[in-house]
Length: 233
Image (tube, rainbow, N blue to C red):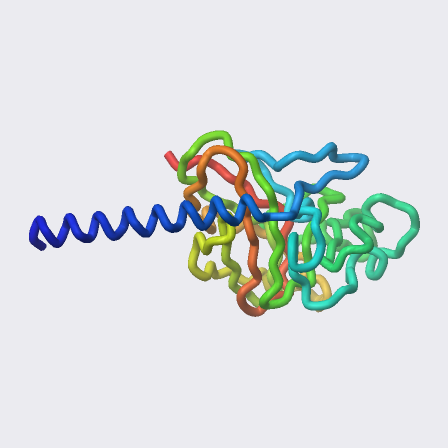
């Protein structure tokens, strides 16, 4: 490769990066979603590095903060009856489907011997996912850097997700390994075998406010609980 060709390629890459930066700035300037808050969580962007709660996706509604295949929350108020409790009614009137980890039931639900990892009790998560669905999470990044992302999840049959950052694709399709275990005698519990996809994604994030988009690309029917961001060293 000649010096001229290398210089041309470098200039082209720099031009593309500049276009991407302008596009992302435009997305942030026009974004109408806001960080989640309620009477238990005071709000503000979730922090990176650190643990991000998927169920604390942004406020703003369908087409702004999320897209869901139907308007019903299949967890809060449905599987989990509206009984006045915080967990059963969490974001009851929004379309993103929410449930939480359940322990000490008979038969055992999320505290079963087929987990790869044991999640905390009462942990809220996004479930009933379908291809094409997405949700946004506003975050505050402490330092411009590359970050690994670990996902706490379940997946009965495997699937694919991806991430956007500030409206621009930031990863290709990311394969999620199935947590199906033929040894479990309860078919419904295949959706409750928890695992961590370690270093699932590698994202470059700029310091300050960013909006992450989590997209379900293929298969679906996965549960997403937390995203752990740690700086790449």
